[in-house]
Image (cartoon, rainbow, N blue to C red):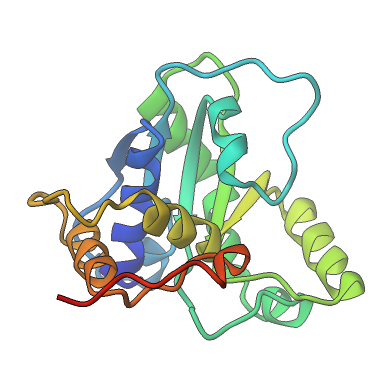
Length: 197
């Protein structure tokens, strides 16, 4: 997995005040090691929610997540259709008992641990999307977060006049914002443009 994808995920959870622990910083000799858990995330102040979390999480759902094991699939040119999921059983290694035992060692026993997959996108068509979600659920995945959600949040939170010296990702976003490389949301289409210096 690309370190850029990992950086996006780490920054996103830290933005939402999660404690983030990377499981392994080295790349193992066997492929199986590459496909395990990427992060353990812990919300020090989780909120109670009436009812279950949605399967496709948005940023507004994160306060209700207490802790999670996170696997990042930064295949940014892929849509996670039923066909892709069926041909890629390695995606589901993080929900196997061996991986879940690691989560128990990391968190201890206590509250529920969400099994969370970060992916580029699900299919747009309703039928294929529902099939993908059903397949992911049947394999033991509790929820997914699309990269689009994470990137939109990071872009919205980065301030052009703040120096993010300790985060290369936020610093790049800040610089791009400062030079007007990001367009505002669609509703702000007719907002007056910033004057060039």
